Structures are given as C-alpha cells and as structure tokens.
Length: 205
Image (cartoon, rainbow, N blue to C red):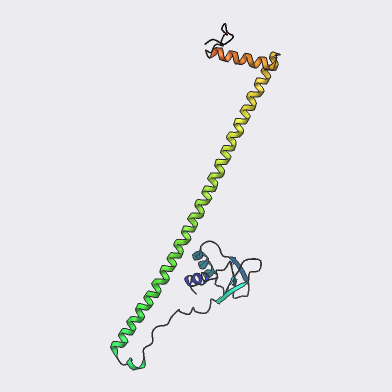
C-alpha cells in the first residue's frame, strides 16, 4: 500500500488512538497516533510492516480494525462493463471507454483534493497549537514580570520603613513626635503655613 492509502485507512472511523505494526519477522511495534497523518503514513510505509492494526486508547488498546499491507487495496468502484449486445459497436465501445477514463480521473482528483484538505487542516491545527503555546509563554512571562515588580516595590517599602524607624531610634525621641516634626518640616518646605486661630477660636484663612 502507498502512504496515501495508509493515511486514508487511518482516517476511517473510528479513528485509532494507536497503531500496532506487525513486521514480517513477527516483531510488534506500537505507535501512538498524534501529529501529522501524512508523516505518520510515510513512516509506516518506510518501515514496511506486514500487518497494520488500528487500536484504541491505552491500557486496553482494543482492536478496531486491521489490514494486510502486502495485499493490494481494493478500489471503491470498478470500470463500467460493456454489455454483450453493444460490444460489436465501436461507437458504444468508445463512449464506454471515455466514460471509464472520466470516472477514473474524477476519482483520482477527489482523492488528491481530500489529501490536500487533510494537509491543510493539519497545518491549521499545528499553527493553532503554536499560537496557544506562545500565548501561554507570554502570559507566564507577564505574570513573572508583574510579580517581580511587586516584590521589588515591597522590598523598597520595607527598606524605607526600616530607615525611618532607625532614624527615629537614633534621635531618641517619641516616634509620634518625630513623625509630627517631619510632617511640619515637610509642610514648611512646601510653603504651607499652619493656620492661626482668630479671636473666635477658629482658624483664620
């Protein structure tokens, strides 16, 4: 069987989850069905097994169907036969032959188109998988970057708090008083003057 015939056989329903290749010397090779059916069919044809078995999922791997690769594949339809009554008519023979040629050409073109469609779908699936993998990597990188920024900001905040606490401890004063003095100094440097109360006990403008 050709790789194209092997691929078409694998695509029949139910589709196999694994394949068992029985070699001419009796050895057995189990192959998982994944990736491109075209490449898998080429690999099977290159190994040259005597028997090909389509099997289900592990661990049971139940047998779905089997085919001997040494036997030629039967065609889906045979050429139209010429009735005995018109075999002597050259026009009828010519028309029948022409019809058979058109039939074979249509059958061949249909198989080629189906194979190209399969290749296109496989390429689209592979492209979608690649895009999803890139998106997952990008999302993971974004999360790591965001987490690193948060960790850095937290470390800086802790460092500022420790530095402020160390300065207050060195000053030997009340922490609340030190904070108030720092606030007043900052307000004075910023040009903000504290409001003075007026005669009515309210702060003047």
